[in-house]
Length: 73
Image (cartoon, rainbow, N blue to C red; front, side, top):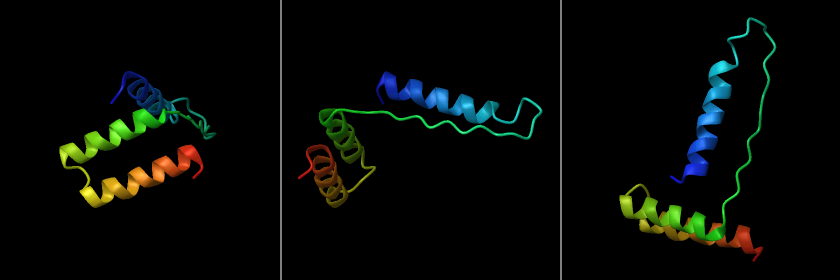
């Protein structure tokens, strides 16, 4: 996991953890959007396959979807 994604995760968890601590019943929702290059997404996908987190078939299907989303093809 790259440092940017890790920092976004920490911020997101902080927001969730602090959402109920201020005494009020009002809850605020924050959307956090991250962007990754096509290369970063493919590298993360390869790591998932290499670690056994996903199968070869899942890898090929997800790789195709990622490339289609990024290139519009």
